Image (cartoon, rainbow over the protein chains, first blue to last red):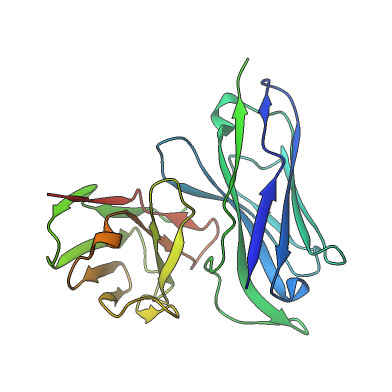
Length: 126
Length: 107
């Protein structure tokens, strides 16, 4: 069974920092690109970041570029999101989600989100 | 960024009804579109990818169609578990973007 389990969500003041983690089991983690997707309370889904299988290539939505850093540890089957300079508008449930699979630098076309965690809530408020 | 316009925002229907949700992209995304279902308080769940490919273990009453800029998700006969919010997502071009969502509620 594939499981993605996020942790690290908390209440933080504006301008503060937080690090989210996502522990993955049941799939060959190092072979999958990974993503973070967030959902503000009562709102829709927003993709915010993607990381390649090796961790060398990262992509960000404009809303978080320069403030958030995505990373991964393939030895620990874990994905991370370092969130800095947090704003009230960053308040959301943060989901980790699996992306496409890549073997020997050859990747499939499946750049949608097949597997999701249950999410972790980040609240930015004074 | 590619904008995705999803309609309707809310859809009221009865068990057994056939319902259709539409997504329009601001430019061609070929067939690079996925559909997700999100039950209240739960994570999204993949239903359809590549516009029309049914994800494993998803009931066949869900059908996706379209290409280019116009796409539809059809539920042939609504079941109790289908009352949820549905999102489409384009993965043609970064940043990947979602439609605003369609809440399917009981009439």
